[in-house]
Length: 193
Figure 1 (cartoon, rainbow, N blue to C red):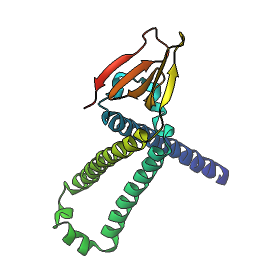
Figure 2: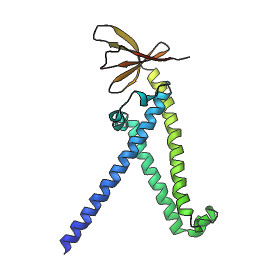
Figure 3: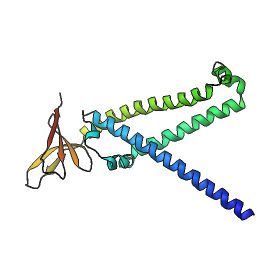
Figure 4: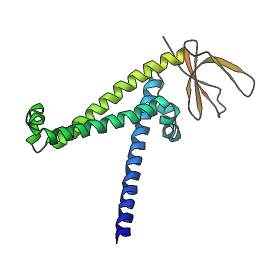
């Protein structure tokens, strides 16, 4: 009897843990996509035109700062929700005052979670903007690299980044997307002002 109870509890915990880990991974991939988009947007590159799914599945792990930010953001959000719940439990009077008495309304629970989600999204976009600008400055300070093609032609410039199929170089004031596996030599994206 006791063994069956322990086994059932163990299976429930494992099942819930799998769900939490899956949701956390999906959120982390989404955050990684946003951060990559904001970084490449600083160079007027729409990274979605040059990437495939696998680039984004690995995006949070390509830069430890994105992974660290994702984990910290998720933990801080959960802690804020926990703090809010504990405040409501421990001091309902001050909680109600701080929320203008709205916590007594039927729609407040939806409003509360919606507000947390909205603030989290605004926070993510603002942080991704800061990340993009900061990383652009860091990348532009890097020394130039040289890309050699199969026909021994070379191009030299500052490497902005790469996907599985494309290398992005800043050559003088021009950003170039150089396909890694295609017969095309390069794609000129734009000229920076």
